[in-house]
Length: 108
Image (cartoon, rainbow, N blue to C red; front, side, top):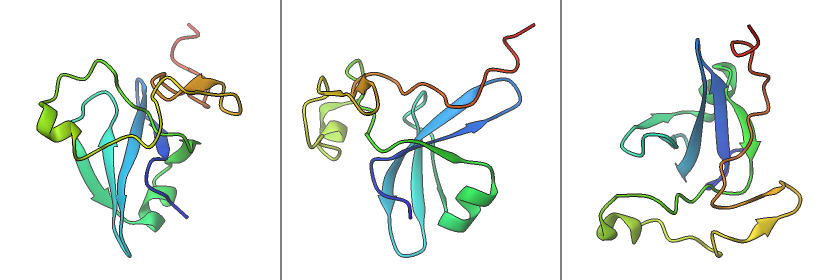
């Protein structure tokens, strides 16, 4: 089951890409690229898992250095302080989650 606020990731040809789950409806899951907030796409829960996406974190990532307009920020209000340290995930909400897959391309 996919929930809003979770972070999913996928290993591409040359890097590990992470996505925030923005919205979950009956059939559609809306994802946002963490590195490029303007990059959104929709998929289904079945396609998400079958395409190789894995859940990295249940704690949302909140970018404190975001340069988006203030009216866009109002739509995505955090439920807790971004500096709150989650000892189970060993990171604060404002820190990027560590990729769970090894970096195969950086070991040359």
